[in-house]
Length: 444
Image 1 (tube, rainbow, N blue to C red):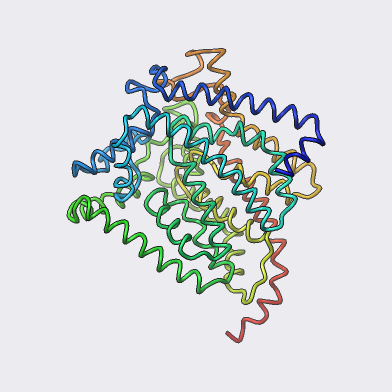
Image 2: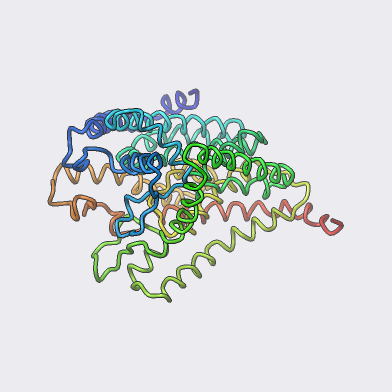
């Protein structure tokens, strides 16, 4: 809080921006509570619930009734259940409450978790002795309050913000080598959003091989315990039948995803993956899908080389910048590889870190501020566009706002690639410090 007070006292512009952001946050949350209460069914759908809640509730009901969790038809990819059977077991807790209570409670829970996410990253940066990043965290608080990816999670009442907090806690636990907590957090990510498992590579890259092996083993036991518990609740035959469908479903999501092709749909949409961007421009053909894979591999090669050199270094004394840079690089690399990229939630924590490592390069800072602020303001743009233009600015059952720049340009991937390039370049600059360690590895 001291850093916030210092920034507040130094800048009139900051005070104005923070007050405006707080007013917006309160207004936006008030509207969201009305939205979740079902008072606006024309926006929330016939059941009056935020869009992702029926997915969780439906999976919980199917689990309780012993019915299949995974659809055979992916034509409506937005509302399919993409999580593991044990997560469906945990979702049965939702059946204890009325759906409207869950919508309202989930909305408020998202806000609480988001606040914890900010405080946790502030704490991590302080404990790692990164005062420049701490200062940038204070400066960027107004951006946190308007951040479009967060409000997108709140609109849908999605578990994404909770998963972001779990991944953050996992990063902290791994850096502090807290084995039990790390294993428990890994197991939660494994049963929910598997792509967020990226921190698992951190101990291996930082030379903590024994901790890595222990973590893998204990996380496997935790995961097996969750699977065993789900078998106890629903029966082993049911769980064993669902798991092959679960793995097949994960494979089918990318191969059968309803890609936007320019000849059929005149705008890119909100999946900003490299594959979707290429398909939109070049068409849905096998060589385009293969080209996307080649491009992703080429983009990730520099970071892969850094990881390879780190994994070979012995007795490595890592800096805080290196540790955090690796964690964020792994996150960005994972989302570069994905074929479906809706948001970059952890980008709000990466933003101040990136600003801090750019040093005095003003044009680079201006570029980062411009690109990220455009992404952060998407929710504001959508809101005021609808307030001014009404239904005339939305198409396809209101799912797309025509004035939204991210509908026509892969803004999410632009943020990911920009942050990835800056962090990878910084990590590359830190590599010469490893030369002494690498010169000693020949005897091993």
